[in-house]
Picture (spheres, rainbow, N blue to C red):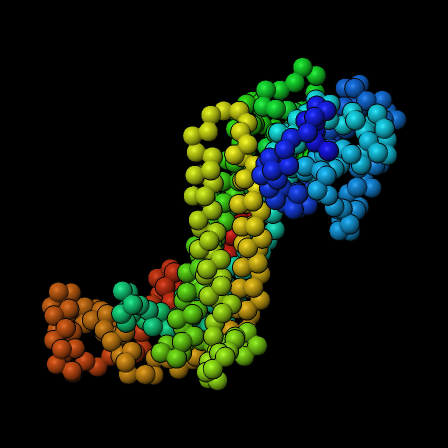
Length: 426
């Protein structure tokens, strides 16, 4: 069944090529097509295009379909092009001519748009919640290990003293920045496109404000052409939000992989969170974190994929836009999986509390030792030269009792201030 069927069939190869994997992806979106269809049916009843009995019958049957989707028994067979055709078939099969009326005053274009907007709102809400859980964990770890010093690096060279408190809370505060992008994406998605039909509105007196309120959108996308031009753009906004989080997670995963290696030995995890080698019995590989790094790097490519797909398309609908789903839906699943597994794994992290006892890290304290000379009255440039000469001659003696007190330093992490920034977003 095709919603555009005019009584003749297309070549099977054309069907296979144009439908692609839409049926599989539509199983994810079907729930939202039902939600939108219920709002649409109520609106048609409100403006008199459906009777009260027809409206009730459609709502009841859509509730039945929603239950099959929730239970996992809803299917889209090869004889159907997509979720829309299957749902309309089920309504018509049960309700006859009443079922055929559900498509009045709408198009597949705004059906897909509104289902995607509802889906992205839900997915972004889940991602926000998962990100907040990781954020909370990182701040708790920062508080727990704030006294444990850690080498800081620049250019992968030993630089200055850091701490696990700084390391964990650095990633926590970076997630705050990422959430600004996610919030922006949510605002783009929180606009109702239903009623734009094929992108040019309808001669029926549809009540778009009613469906906006019915589906819980903050506002509607007023201009019907702008609504249609939002296809691909709302997914791209979501992709930018995910890419921002993914950049943070991939960097964190890379740090973990480095810090777990024998050459660093800063952190470790229980055996059950690592993997072994088929021939090297000593190996404890950070496969989980390597895969987080890889998946997050893939996610960072999604905005570019979508840009290449939708770039320079003229206004109006084009079949190119069908491919947006197969890019954004798997990326969302990967994003949620990475957030979940990182939160799960980091709960078990073990930190090495004696890292800086190794003399190789003595030079970490050169700046603090230099600063003490300056505080005693020596000009900075003279103190710098004196310290350089001592290091070169092998006479450097580090000042290990360091004191960093300004906001955001290892002695003053400002964890509650960072927490307040995230809470403000929520």
